[in-house]
Length: 165
Image 1 (cartoon, rainbow, N blue to C red):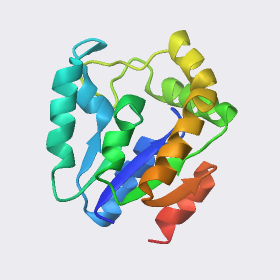
Image 2 (cartoon, one colour):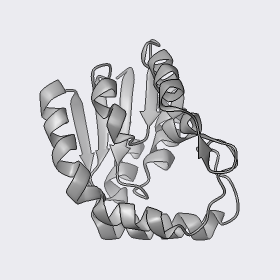
Image 3 (spheres, rainbow, N blue to C red):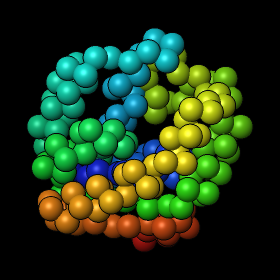
Image 4 (cartoon, helix red, strand yellow):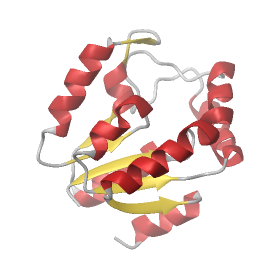
């Protein structure tokens, strides 16, 4: 395990897991949101993001945390392991709500720019559509590239995994 992707629904705990995994393995951690966001909820261009991502992918080892469906296939071409947080929509909605309540008005360390946590109903709508839209494509790409895949259906499974490595 030298090149790891952590993917799944928003609010599933990907970033929390990624930080803990990086601490246990010593692998460098890249948060895609930290690359993507700048300023006050502004983002970099697609070209700039792709260039920064390519620079990270070519490094010897990493943990890359984040969805960014558009670049998933490219990331799968480089990784050897995927942790897939395949949570229900309800679990993700609860996770995001807890995160907003905990961090309201602050920028989390896994976010770029001045992306202050707040209730964002467009984001909640995206979570409602996430599994229907993303799950089939994600599973298809995982079959195509065949990395080692560890699937978590809930946070307890992820916590148990971390305890046992």
